[in-house]
Structure formats: structure tokens, C-alpha cells
Length: 272
Image 1 (cartoon, rainbow, N blue to C red):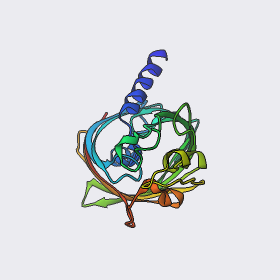
Image 2 (cartoon, helix red, strand yellow):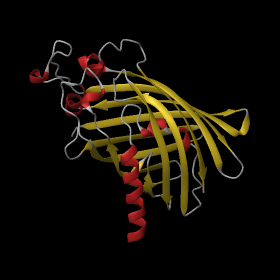
Image 3 (cartoon, rainbow, N blue to C red):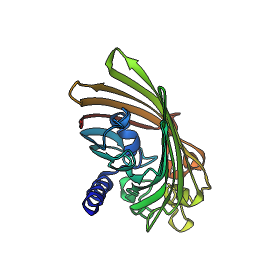
Image 4 (tube, helix red, strand yellow):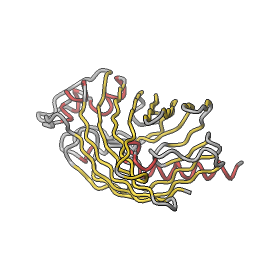
């Protein structure tokens, strides 16, 4: 048992070292985990690697290439450790619903990544603790969570609801997943990422004190081709818009399009 938990903790730390926040790993690697694991297996392993182009931070105009290492391990359909889903334990399991606590990681924000955040403090990386659920009903996929930042990072609360539908795409081995997610943040979170204290205000970025409310809305599509031996490839893309005070924040700058956050990625992997 100690060895098993040690392995799962190692996977979580690996995920933490590569995690993203603008288009986070749960969105960037959506296609790689959208195909249901075999629930009759005691141990399911999903390994993959890919690359994505995404914003440096939520609301930033600057983009960067991000490596996508995927290690997703699930034991007894309850315990999971994943660079995409975090580290968790499903306490309630059923034919179409699983729910339980999990730990995730927020990479924070380097203030020097953008001219509009250069006068602000960095947002430190932090672990987040919360409740997570997955539900698979026919062709539909539902996921969601409520989590809180721990330690010296944003320290706020964040909630997300994600829904997608699986569509046959040409052959039995090809599936297209189309979906979207909506996130809500409390005032502590929005102040950390989108607030501008009066002492740090500049002519470019005036003082701003955001309140709680919706943070962003994203839409995405993931094409998955599965080979007969368990190997697969995915192509993932999406776009999102900031909402509420996140959209009104001067940190966002002149991102005035309807959809302001784009990403495109690809991955190859193998399911054991």
C-alpha cells in the first residue's frame, strides 16, 4: 500500500511540475482521457506525450508552447493519479457517476510574463483541495469540481462545470468530442489574478478591485483516433472568453474579441 501511494504521489508531483493555468491540463488533454477506461481492470494506465500552444496566463496576449506529458493511473476504479486529473479518490461510485476528494495544482503566475502584470506581485504556485465528479451518460460526458487554493498561492475558491458529447467520426475508431466548460471564482481568487492594488497601479494598469463571479467560458473539440492495440492520437483545439470582473480587469488589456483565449494541441499515447 505504501509503494502504491508513493507511485501515485510521484505522478501527482510530475503533473504539478508541468501544469498549466490559462488553458489548463484538464482542457489541454481532454481528448486523451475522454475515452472511458476499462472498468473491469484493477489497474488502468494511460501514457502519452504532446505539445500545445496556449496563452502564458489567463487573459494574457502572449502565447507559448507547452509540453503535455500524460500519466494517468487508476486503481480499482477509485484511486487515481494523473497529470491531467490530479490525485484523488472516488468515495462514491456507480454505473454513471463517480465523486470524491482530489488534489490539483495551480502553477500561479509570473508577473513578468506580461507588461500588464509587471508591476504586480507574482501569484505563487499552490496545491488546491476540493471535490470532483465524473458522469458518463450515453454519449454525454459531465465533469465538475469545487476547489480551494492552499498555501501561499491564490488562496481562493474556484468551481468548474464541463459538459461534452461524443460523436462518431467516420469509423468505429474515430470519435469527435465537442464540449465546453464554465468556471466561477470567489473574490479572493479574482483579486489574486485580476486585481490591481492602489499601491501597484500604473498609468497602463489602474487600480481595480474585482468581486466574485463567473471567470471564463471555454468551448473545445477533441478528435481521437484509437488503434487496435491500444495506441491513440488526439488533436485538440479550443477558445475561451473571460467573463465578469475578469473580463473588466485592466490586467486583461485590450483583448476585446468575443473569444480571447485560444489553444491548439496534439498528443500520442497508449492505454494499458
